[in-house]
Length: 109
Image 1: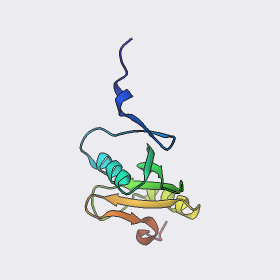
Image 2 (image 1 turned 60 degrees about the vertical axis):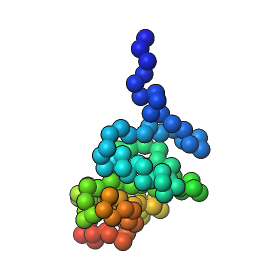
Image 3 (image 1 turned 90 degrees about the vertical axis):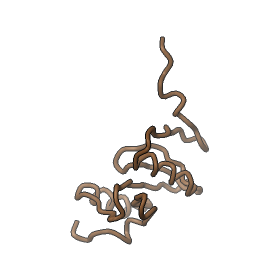
Image 4 (image 1 turned 180 degrees about the vertical axis):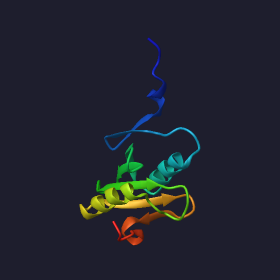
């Protein structure tokens, strides 16, 4: 059997397994920014990344292309629900860095 291609990308930190993203895109940059800020990225999807801070409090991060930090309507509903449930939700772009969701939320959900 051949060797698994993704085996070298799979890492573990504090008991949490994750895969480092490939390429030089906004998701890879967001992943690296999360690690640099002390977050432990756990997985991707919607939101772009789930993760944990140093106290193992859950965080959700949406990686966005531009500093306008605008979510589409479905993302806003999910982010609002997560935030209301006590999950720290952040919006991230290369231009603006991390911004708390509540500071940028649009109230017409």
